[in-house]
Image 1 (cartoon, one colour):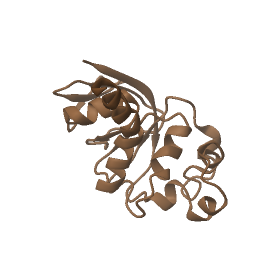
Image 2 (tube, one colour; image 1 turned 60 degrees about the vertical axis):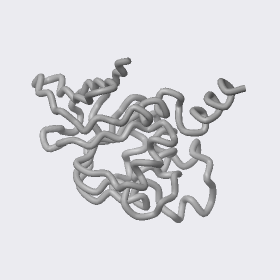
Image 3 (cartoon, rainbow, N blue to C red; image 1 turned 120 degrees about the vertical axis):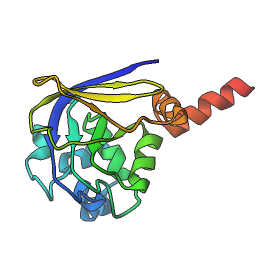
Length: 169
C-alpha cells in the first residue's frame, strides 16, 4: 500500500525539544490540544501557531523532540493539522509518541528543504521518499517498519489495538 502526503515546509533548526514544541507552563493550565495548538512552538517562533495551515510539514535539523517524554508534544502538532515531522534525527521517545498518536516521523536529510517549499512524500511498505516539488530532488528516507505503518494507518496505537481486538472476537 502506498501512502502519499503533500505539504508546505515550516522550517526549524537543531535541538527542538518538547518544551519548545509546547511549553511546560502552558501544560499546567490545560492538556486540551485544541487550546494548546495556539501555543505550538511559541518559544522558537511566537507567530508560528497563527500561520500554520492544515497539511503543513515541520522540517527540522538534528535531535527533534528531545527532552520530556510527554506525548502531548506529538498530539499538539497533530491538533494543528500537521501530519508529519521531517528531521535529520528524532529522539526515540518522540518518535514512538508520534507513531502511537498517528503523526508520521520521517528521518532524512533536510538540508535542502527551505521554508515555504512544497514537498511530496511517498511511503510504501519498503521505501520512503521525499520529493522537493520545485527542484524535483528526491531524498530517500529511512523506511518505517510494517507494524508502524499499520499503526499509522489505524490512526494511532489505541485505534490499532481496538481494531485488532475487534477482529479477534
